[in-house]
Amino acid sequence: MTTARTATPSTARAINDRLALNLLLEQGPLTATELRDLTGLSRPTVADLLDRLQRTGLVAVVGERGEQRRGPNARLYALVASRAHLAAFDVRSGGVSLVVADLAGRTLASAEVPVHGDGTPDTAQHLVRTLLDTARGVGVERLHTVAVGAPGLVDPATGRLNSTGKLPAWHAELLAELRGLPGTEVILENEVNLAGRAEYRIGAARDRDTFVLLWLGHGVGAAVVLDGRLRRGFSGGTGEIGFLPVPGTGGLPSATGCDGGFHSLAGSAAVCELARAHGLPAGAAGDAPAAEAAVRAALDALGPDGPGGPFLDELAARIAVGAASICVVLDPGCVVLGGELGRAGGAELAGRVERRLAELSPLRTEVRPGTAGGGAVLAGAVLTAGDAVRRDLFGEP
Image (cartoon, rainbow, N blue to C red; front, side, top):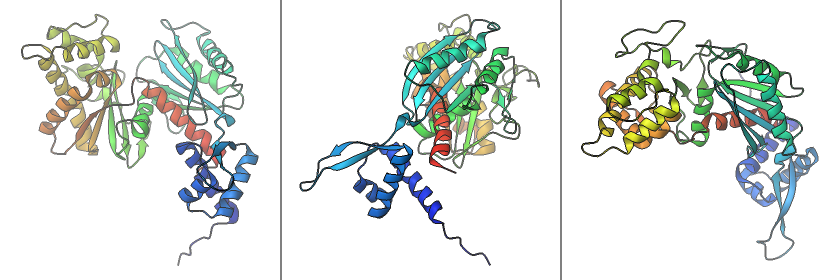
């Protein structure tokens, strides 16, 4: 026979504190009366928790609200967003983007730092100095948590970054430098997983607890969210669909390279080649910006005799091949198109992929364009770092 446990007074206080702090985080300044209405807690309990949270420095009185006709105005209580600070990195082969944010996730400062070629011996140190200088520029002397989004596999057991291609040496050196910052927690996550988290929390999949983000950029990848949980797999390789063997590539991928896999069908170089075949402008470099420009040019050439429609139809057919391979195994019900190409194609490309996908799979799947924007990786990193800070400060499980 199992008996239910009764929460101890300290456990009940911790639960109530977390509830109030999350409400202040999500809804902004609130009065004690509003907190009572939202939490269902008694007047003495709310008064006690507000007093306790003010002593810890997590909550402060920030003003008054004067709706009451009689008696004194009600005090407004707010989360002290400067109680802790965090940072986020989006690490690419050609440099990094970074932001410094407060406890509420509000961006205080940002920086873009290019890295040319393979970098120099002091590239990692330079990037960390830039982060610290950026933080100090807005009065932040200590970073509680830094979340880093990088390409490659992040081993769930060790937290190490394992390359599926040839990553510059400074990627690993940057992580080592960040982990040397005293008193700062460093969280490493695959970049596409972070973009998926952003789409789940603030983007196109806010109303879904199961979906797949299909990342279409220089390379291709996927983030898998099932029942509200990001899935990484045994070795952190869930979503490495660039290696997916698919028809139409003229070869097969290998354990050391994704040429011949889905990457060769829908990566930026392949998209640029496809655009040129349809008479659309495409940069010779075949990188993500060039492929994005080609997709935008196609949208501008959608007339009856224009090349835009045939190009988008063929691109959608290619994307649907990869999406179908995921959907018939996971049945997510929703695929979000992210990355530079998914963002550029918008609803027009998403609709074409959905129609083609319906021809390939018996499983009903909605296809949506991503809405988390070009900063989806950074946004996901800020959310991830913020969750870690709140677990520490709020005592969240």
